[in-house]
Amino acid sequence: MGKKYKKKQSENLPSLEPLVATPKTNTAKPKKQGGAFYKQFILLLGSVFLLMIFMSLKKNDDWFNSHILEYWDEYQDQKTNLDIETRMQMRFGDNYVISKTIADVAKKNKFDKETILIPASSYFEAQGLPYKVPEPAVFYYFTSQKTAWMNSTDTATAKWLVFSQNKRLLFFKIENKQSRDSILQYYRKYKPSL
Image (cartoon, rainbow, N blue to C red; front, side, top):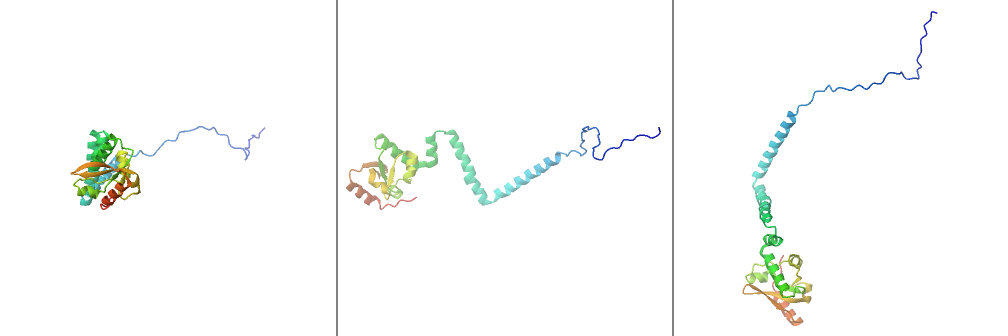
């Protein structure tokens, strides 16, 4: 009776130990948040300093005044005048007002569906009117009125002419091809400019 019986573990079998999950504790010290705030503050001061240097240059200051501040002033005006017509008048000035007046007269007299011949800007300047005639596409954008310049191919369909007399705009009905040809011959000496 003397031998103790010893169990041998097989080499192929894993050892059976109880599996208990033990939480790992974080032994690292938490980082201080004061350092991040300090870095952000230094970056802010550096950015402000660089902007001050940038804006102290004459060219950059002129750009800032003519683009950013001008936009801000226009915004302040436009936010108080939300009417689209008023904003168009403010943005495009006399050119828009005169173009709109031409279209309004055409609509009132019921020839707004017909093409209107408009002389070049140099003609109106020679007559003492400060009217820079917009391109026909821009004129249509402003007013929904179809127009033609004297040097365009659309002159054959034009039924009306706008001209100036004593700093007033007047309309002339084009009755036939002969009158259209004489009108074109006279007004083509004024060269359109963009």
